[in-house]
Image (cartoon, rainbow, N blue to C red; front, side, top):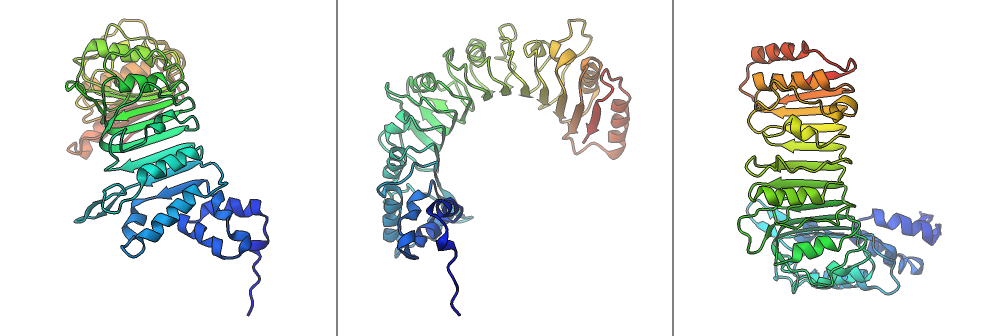
Length: 396
C-alpha cells in the first residue's frame, strides 16, 4: 500500500522548525529523502555531540563521522548557530573517560569551535577532560567573539591565557570550571565582559598564587569596578585575606543574587558594602549575623546553611533591627546539623522581627536525633511568637 508523504508538502519554514527536534544524525539523514530535503539540514541551529555519541563510534565509521561534522558545520549558506555543545563522557565503571580531544581519533575540535564561531554562535558549552590550553589548543578567537551570549568551559587543568585584545561584548553568562588563569588573564577577561550578568569560576586557580583557591568570582586584588551589570554570583573563599575579600565585594555590590561561603578568618566584618539590589542571599558557613543583614536592606529571600552550629551572634541583641527584616524579607530557609539552644535563639529573633515573613523552613541534617527529641524541638519552635501572622513554619 502506498503511503502519502504529507510531511514533505509542508513549507521549508515549517520543516526547518521541525528538524532541530531530531537527533543530529537523524536530521542530516533527511537530506536523502528527496531534492526538497537535500539542504534543509543546514538550517539546524543547535549542534550537540555528547559522550554517548562518541562511545558509539567505531574504526569503521569514524572517518565518515568526521566528514559528516565538516559538512554540518561548514556547509555554505548556513544559518547562524544558537548553540554548539561538545561533552565528553564516562565510558563505563572500568573503561574510564571517553574524550573528544584525547588524540586517539584525531578529531579537529579546535576547527569545530572555530567553525561554530564563524557561524555567529550564541552559546558554546564545552565539557572536555582534554580541552588543552588557550592558546594553542583552543583558538584565542573564542575570547573575541561578539556573538557569544553564553559560554561554559568545563576544562580540567586547562591553562587560560587571555590576550590583550579580548572582548566579549555581548556575553551575559560565563561559567569556567577547573582551569588555571595565567598572569593577568582573569582581570583582562572580566574587564572586557561589559554586560555580564551571571559569572561563576568554579574550582579554578591563578598561576603563581598558590595561597588562593577559586571556586566562584574570586580575584586576587582586582576591584572589579566594571561589574555593574552582574546579577548573580557564587563566591566560595577558603584562603586569602580580608582585604582581598573586601575588594571583591565592592566590585559585585550591584548583584541581585549571591551565594557566599567564606572562612571566618577572612570575613571582612568592618568593610562590607551595602548591597542595595540584593534580593536573594544564600550564606554557607557559621558566621552570618545580624550585622551582615544590615548590608542587605532589600533582601527578600535568605538561605542559611550552617556547617556546625548557629553560634551566639543572635543572642542578647539591642542593636537596630535590619530594614530587610522590617519591610522586605518574605522567605527564610535554615539548614543546620543540629537544632540546639543557639539555633532556637536565632529563629526566635528572626520571627520576632521579620514583619512580612511568609515562610520559614528549618531543615535538620542530624540523623542521630531521635523522634522524641525532634518532636520536642518542633513544639518549642512552633510556640515562638511571630510578628508576621501569615508566616508558615515548616520543620523537616
